Amino acid sequence: VTRDLPTLVTGRLTLRPFRVADAASVQALAGDVEIYRTTTNIPHPYDDGMAEQWIASRPESFRAGEGVALAMSRTRDDVVVGCVGLTIRPAERQAELGYWVGVPFWHNGYATEAAMALVDYGFAALGIAKVTARHFAGNPKSGRVLQKIGMTREAVLRHYVCKDGVFHDVVVYGVANPADPASRDS
Ligand SMILES: CC(C)(COP(=O)(O)OP(=O)(O)OC[C@H]1O[C@@H](n2cnc3c(N)ncnc32)[C@H](O)[C@@H]1OP(=O)(O)O)[C@@H](O)C(=O)NCCC(=O)NCCS
Image 1: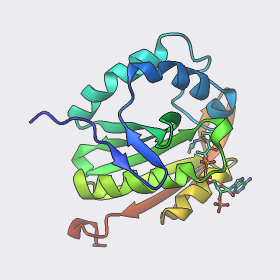
Image 2 (image 1 turned 180 degrees about the vertical axis):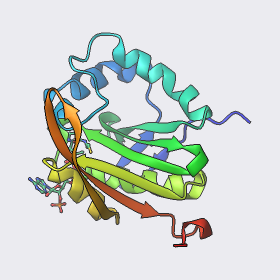
Image 3 (image 1 turned 90 degrees about the vertical axis):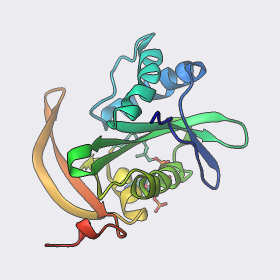
Image 4 (image 1 turned 30 degrees about the vertical axis):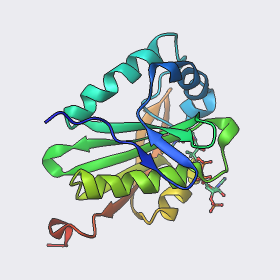
């Protein structure tokens, strides 16, 4: 079965597959050092061609069951404001949630709105049993997003990630799929 990346509609956003035409927006928004500072998988500098290549590889990644990454597009004008994704570990039926919102669009609740919808989709459509997420302790805004979508703070990993020569504490959040019997405590 060939599965195509989904499109999910929320109150203000359309979470849809990225198109090649979005590459310039992705490069400009994700290339901002403010996004690089609190993430671990976004290149900096964000060079020409990187966005095109990343966008082009998303459908295959989804078909391989490795993850789903969607553009947060503002429904009223189709402006791309950010990205939300799940990186999947199929054997464990677990997924790691990630997101960024372009700096001009911060503090509108977009990360919360998008993350909520994608977690629901992961549970309902992808058979995910548990979603985890992690943020640098120095990025409490992201912790607020995770709390607002109903995730629970599970652990703090001290000095867990070394970024540009500085160790960061990492806060781990999780939520089990309430409809999945395998998620009950043993
Ligand atoms: C983290 C990020 C995605 C948040 O996006 P956003 O769309 O502005 O988030 P939201 O508006 O949905 O929610 C942000 C929440 O953080 C709160 N917040 C803002 N500054 C804060 C601070 N210094 N401490 C604690 N909470 C803070 C906001 O008040 C809001 O919560 P509220 O609705 O209860 O008031 C965005 O800042 C970003 O892209 N940062 C860089 C990339 C990144 O860190 N990604 C996550 C990696 S784990």
